Amino acid sequence: MASSVFAFAAKSDYFGTWQSQAAKNGNVATIKIYEANNKVYGRIIGMTHPKKDDNNPDKSKRNRDIVGITIISSFTYDKNNDSFENGAIYDPETGNTYHCSLKLQNHNTLKVHGYVGGIKLLGRTVIWKRK
Image 1 (tube, helix red, strand yellow):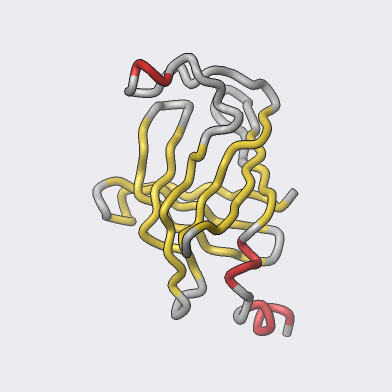
Image 2: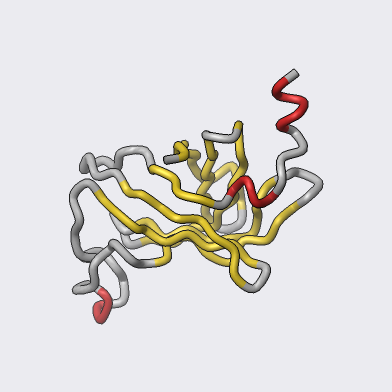
């Protein structure tokens, strides 16, 4: 019964503070997801081991702190699938930006799927937990 009730979650259920899975280097990020101008964004607001954006392909950004940068951007809500689609996610660990979709599994679990070239099969999914 709970899953059928959750199937009609409001898009605002996506907003709030989320904790990422641990990266290969063990770092865990805290991300705030919010809406601005009818698009969804996410900014890193904390990390277990704060560092600089050393791997950014733009050399002028390599000295900036990762805490404070926007890593997910420009998502639009797909009400038919109750998901956010057509966005982008920046991976500070690699310096790469990927296409991305967001889908709630339940109120406290968010599937974040990054993929290459607009082909969802060429990607990976990570789980973020509500904080």
